[in-house]
Length: 110
Figure: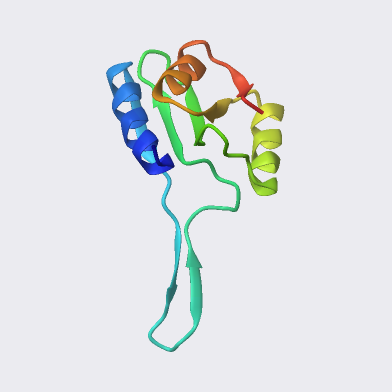
C-alpha cells in the first residue's frame, strides 16, 4: 500500500477517534514572471497534524510505509517537537497513529 493510501485511512481513523486532523500540503510553482516559488510549510513538517477534541492537545503524525525512513529535516522537526513535549511520531498504519494520539506518545517510531 502506498503512503498516500495509508494517510487517507489514517485521517479517517483519527477522525473516528475524536480528533480534528489536517493534511499538511506544500508545494512549488512557477510564478507568472518565471520565478520558482516555494510555498507552504517548513522543511521536515509532518504529513498530518491536528488536535484531540477532548483536551485540545495538538499532535503531529509522519506517515511512512513499512520500510520508509525519516529524512534529516524530519528528524530535526522531531527533535524540536520532543523538546517542547508535543505528541508526535511515525505511523506506518492507522492503528499506529491512533496509538500515538491516544497514549500521548512523544517521538514514537523515531
